[in-house]
Length: 275
Length: 284
Image (cartoon, rainbow over all chains, first blue to last red; front, side, top):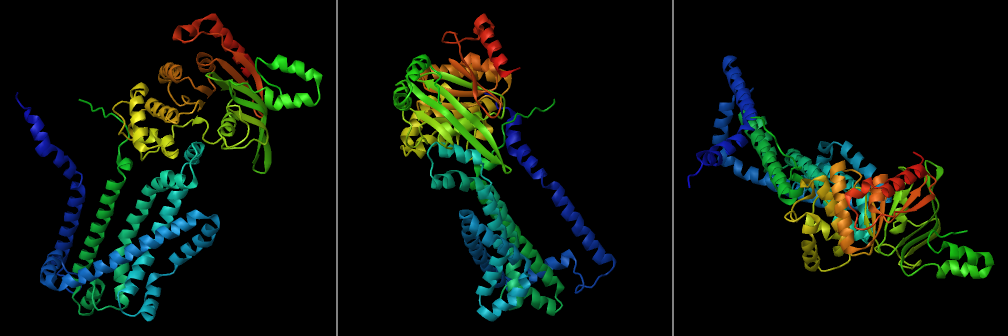
C-alpha cells in the first residue's frame, strides 16, 4: 500500500505550523517593539542609567546570573506559600459565605472593604507585628490573592441552575449530594478564572512585601539596583518577575485543562470549508 | 367537594346521594383503585408574586392508571409544571390530596421519575455517568448501574457515546439521554414535562415514535405535558385539558386509537375528531 505523502506532510509540518502561526502576530509585535526601543536608545544616545537598551539588559542578565539565583528562589518561595495560604483561606471563606446567607451578609462587605485598603500601607505594619522574616511577605501575597478566589468561588457556587438542583432533589438527593454533584463541579470554571487572576497578582505581592524590609528576594534586588543606578539590573528583575508570573499562569491554565476536560470540549459542530 | 374523574364517577355519585359520614369515608379510602397510580384530588396551589397572590392550581382532579399514557395539555404558563412539581414531591399542595401508588401519606420524593423540560444533563459528566445519576443517588453500586445502563444505550440510540460529554451531542440525543436517565431510576410512574418542546418538527416526530416504542417495552405509567395537540392525541390513552391560570381541568378525552400507534393514524377520522375536540376545549 502506498502511503499518501500529504498525510505524512500534514503530521510532520503543517499541523504544528498551524499552531505556531497563532503566536506569530504576538512574536512579531514584540520583536518590533524591542527593535524600536533598541534603535531609539542608539539614535538619541540615551544613557544606560536612564534607559538601557534591550541588548544592554540582556548583557546585564548574563552578568548578574549568579547573583540572581537566591533572590529568585526566595521570591518564588514567598509567592507559592502566600498563594497556598490565599487558596486555603479563600476557599474556606467562600464555603462559609455559601453555607449561610447570614454569613454572606456579614462577610461579603468586609471582603470588599479589605480590597480598598492599599496593601502597601499594611505591609509596614506587618513588619512591625511579625518582623523581617518570611511571614509578612506570605501575608501580603495572601491579601493580594485571596479576594478573586473568594469572589469567583462564592459566585460560582451560587450560579448553579435551580432546575438542575430540583431534578436531583426529585431523585431524592440530599443537600450534600447537591453540593458535591452539582454545585461544586459547576463552580470550577469560575473558580479557575479567579485563581488565574490571583496567580498573576501573586508575584507582585511578594515584591511589595520585600520592599518594606527583606534581606533577599527580587524586590530587594530591584531596590538595591535602583539605589546604585543599575537601571539595567532593575529591568532584568522586571523581566524575571514577568516571566515568573507567566509561568505560574500557564501552570494554572494547564491544570485547569487537565482537571476540567469537559469545559474545553468543543461544542458539536461540523466545519464546512469551501473548496 | 372532591369529584373523581374516572369510570367510577357514576358509582360514586350514587353513593353520594346517601350523604353523610359514610361518603366521607369512601372518599378517603374506597375510591382509590388498585390500578390507580396517580390520583389528584382538589389540588390547590398559590404563589406570592411581587406581593400579590396568584392562584396557579384551582382544584385539580385527575387520575392516571397503571400502564396508562396520560397527557396534560393547556396554554403556556397555566401551571402544568407546578402540578408536576407537586406530584414528584418538590412542592406541597396548599389543599387537596396526592395519591401515589394508592398511598396519600409519606414522602413522595423519589417515587416518580421526573424528566424536566430542559435536558439538564450535567456537563461535567459523560453520557453514561449522567444516565446512572438516579441509581447513584439511591446508593446502588456504580458498576451494577453502569452495566444496566450500557445495555440500554443502543435502545436509546446512544451506543458508542457513553464516554462523550453532553455538549457534543445533538438536541435529540440529549433528550434521549435525559429519558434514559429517567428510565434508569426504575420508577413505574414517569413525569415527562414537554420533553420534545425544544426540538425541530422532524426530530420531534421521530422521537415520538421512539418514545412509544420505549413505553411499549417498559410500560410505566406516563404523565406527559405538551402544548402540541397533535402530539397529545398521537401519544396518549387519555388527554386532560387544563384551563389558563387559575388552572382547572376543563376536559378529559379518551383517545380511541388502537395500539401500537403508527403515523398513518394521523389522517384518520377519529384522530382528527380528537384534535378538533381538544382545540375546541383549548378555545383556539
